[in-house]
Length: 369
Image (tube, rainbow, N blue to C red; front, side):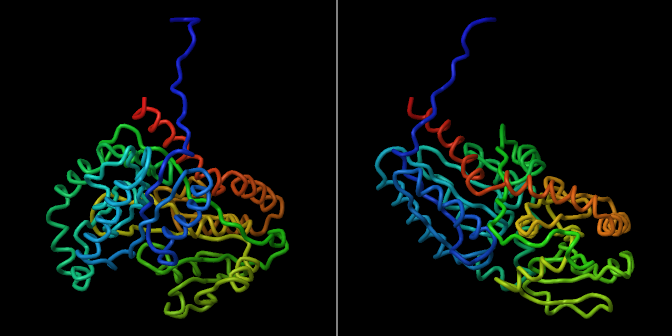
């Protein structure tokens, strides 16, 4: 009725709740880095945090999954008061998916790192992954069935995706009422010189795997102005074939990583299709957040999820034209620097955790009334 007070459900106090948190072991991959950051704030807000750690993609066997499920069940059963069971889900990583099914927590939630599906390859054990024909033969023929299986498994789970488009796609593919949007936080990194004071260069950065654009170096070198150096760094890049006019550095960490970003004015992300089957993935790129941490703008070809933080163009030719114009224009670089700084201030780990905390509070308020 017009003029009547709106009734709001009071938020639940997380300081009386237990969080059972399922994530890859520290140092495993980008998901484990994300988990470590989120846990710093979770420990400050919840009464108790119980970690259940596991291997990365293809690292665990059936026995590992069964052992992990038992650990999750015990942690939930032994907890006092309300219990939140949260898992960090990504492609081919088994325990976060199988450990969530059937668990009797007050609230079950999950972050979908490879939206719009949670696990993609639910039978990719260590043994199965040794033979790509077995791996794909086991999953590819039953993809529609696997999607329906994920839809049923995630039906009553509070889901989060790390990009705007990923959240909407997950709602559609998993037939989920409402997938909450979160984001990858920007890590802390040193302050670098202004963009216009850095060398006239662009960079590609990150782990080498299919679809990230490292196979397009020849095309990029031909399209980008010869005066602009192309520098490449990240784990696995040392194995890339040499390309004239491209400097390949290999893995960089610590001061070497600082120096790499100090040597470029922008990072380019020429992503392409990452999987040969299944729905298109929506990327939350840790390489992009790393660039933002170093006050470095990102220019990308269009791919689902990248437009949350990057300047996006349809083709490599358009990307090259934009890069050439940007790097030669100090005013445009200053404008981009301001945009990047605003993103750095907003995309903090504390703000990312608050997305979870608010939704957990609402969910617990609903189940404890």
